[in-house]
Length: 403
Image (cartoon, rainbow, N blue to C red; front, side, top):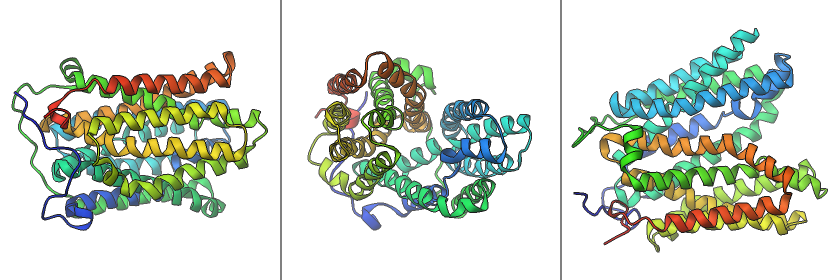
């Protein structure tokens, strides 16, 4: 019998440190920030392969796809390892393997070596994330998890923003140097965690040990959250695929698009630390559904935007939805996860985003080509409205939805 869990949002308990969160959380937060401060591999991989290594564009794209496929598997392996081997061990393995494989990619010169190194980078790239997110749930009380995951997302965006800003200056030393710096940041984060990461015994299973398929089969709330996560990610990817194409058709070039995407980052950095203070006013599922709806309506409004200013306003609207969803997603998955399956539940939350990254560009560009921009953006709004409505059907005491 499942008992009613504490609300996911609310007043912080006594004994917290900065922002009411325990010191163990800030160890994990610091590792995320340090690692993201040198995230150069993802945005510059194809440039590295085509310029430094002289590969054709199609070959570079294939290697990037292989890396992405490896990343999809990586998170699932990391979730299993976090639950069976341990959070701390998986964290350390993830960061140190990421550093080693990035060095291998930087030093690879032949096509077979580049392919093998890229697959290895993919397989190590997401190993640590499920363990880190599960450990957050282990050390942070339920009322503060929305705040904790919100601040973790904030760290990711601050680090990535600073990385992209510094990449221009550092690129003069070559893309190989960028990859080596990326590897160094992963190694530094790993050393930091080796010294500071909390040691927590693995929770003992209280019933069946379970796994990915059995959890999806038996947990209706998990299935609904996975569907919502895939839909969210698929629509969100339009910001990086069909939005620049739409703006280009309107005579708004790369410079205008760059400003628009920068606005997205600024909104997240400005609002994310304070999101949970607003979200405490509503029930967790209502907050999440509202974020999904706001994101969908924002993307839908792109159909009405025709100038730089109107696109800027639209981006602000869906960025607020992104802020809400980022705060609630991790907290919701953590709330419904049995303690001994937290790693795998958190892996599924990341897997949703990976599926959307793969499906979003294909679906979005196909709709844009066949039906046009109006149908594409209207479809985004309808899809997210339907998903938000479905999410409201969740009545689960584990997330404080029922009294």
